[in-house]
Image 1 (cartoon, helix red, strand yellow):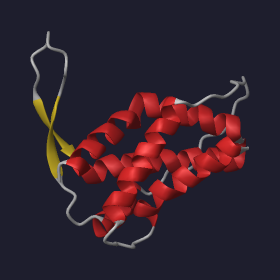
Image 2 (spheres, helix red, strand yellow; image 1 turned 30 degrees about the horizontal axis):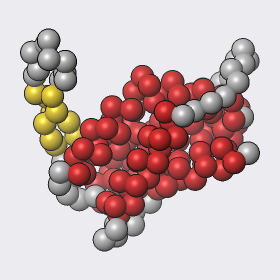
Image 3 (cartoon, helix red, strand yellow; image 1 turned 180 degrees about the vertical axis):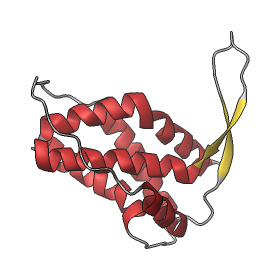
Image 4 (cartoon, rainbow, N blue to C red; image 1 turned 120 degrees about the horizontal axis):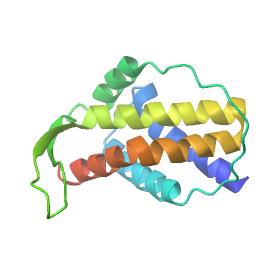
Length: 150
């Protein structure tokens, strides 16, 4: 039960930046802390897997989330990221987008919340772990690095 409360609290703390316009002087620091807590939560996810089939959530309105983030963080923009940190490979620079990073994180969190509310905690934790490892972990890392250097 404590894990459920923590999960929902983290989702709400991050998702609010893409759902409600409320730019504040402390927004960037609040976001940084919430992302760090979310990262720590995700690397420590524990749940009992079940074989139940659960329906997927409805799609989120990605464009609306992006627009709200742009209001809350008007200085967010593009940045450079190395394609690899492996010394045996030749790295390439590519462009990252702080608004896209946060919008992708929020979209996955909103699906996690929907799954929690409609399918239960097990499905929500399963989806969160899957989407973290396969998708938004790198977005969190890149966005935290961007925030640190802006």
